[in-house]
Length: 173
Image (cartoon, rainbow, N blue to C red; front, top):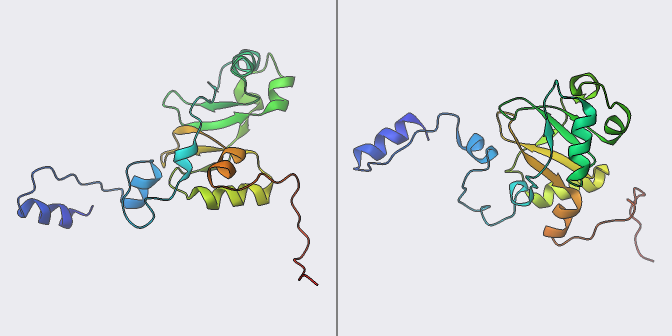
């Protein structure tokens, strides 16, 4: 809330007033509590898998690969010591470069989503783009987890398409 709003609440006798200078959208983008018209709709943060494997820049890819596969994953997220996303090791990198350092073979700067995005909108975007999963981060880049398209579609009541029909719509007739 703004400084003015915080001051006004204090002047009205409220004793537990907290100013969040980054703003409402940043609050939501960090997956914090929400109220209002859209509060009842599921968001990306509701469907995030938090058990995604991580590794450091200087870690050997073979070690990261072994750990990821043991946990049932074919990817590993490269993070800083504060869990800031630096890159991602996808299946081809995990398969090919066992002695290389993660930094040398990672996909740098992967696309990320915020936890406050509406789940139905995100499910549609992932389906249209043919993307199976995306990283979810807080506004400061800290890894929150991974959103699987299949889970987003399931939670929004859709059916996972087997192929995307990109042909123009036809009228029945």
